[in-house]
Length: 180
Image (cartoon, rainbow, N blue to C red; front, side, top):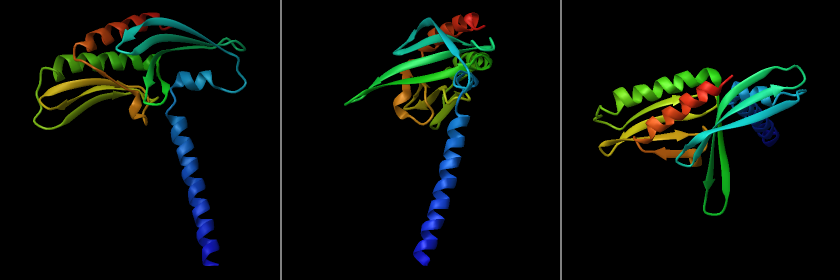
């Protein structure tokens, strides 16, 4: 009886955890990703190349539901990570309403964070609703910069130089002009 009760408790607990995990994963999608994957829709995706920073490609994506003619656009980051035994494409999608926040964050990092020094290990980061992250960290006497495309994937980091941030900013401003 005790083993049966323990097994039943374990199954209930696993079901609850799995349900919460699924809910968390759902919340990690950008609005554009949710729009493009909705059931009962016929979605057209058009990709416009903006440029490349290190090994990450930046594109603008136009999504159109061909059934009801609803439209949405976003900025897509794509990075091909090559591991020891395989390669994998890492993708992040930022909604149009998040681009201004990322641009402003990069400008603040360039103007206020890079000229400063920290006494302890310090991190500064911008995070999108879909899990994209951009920022910098103070370590070993200098600031290091990065973008991270997928929230729970350490292989999705693209490490940048401080000198890469102006180019990233320029590419984002170009993408913003193409967002519909």
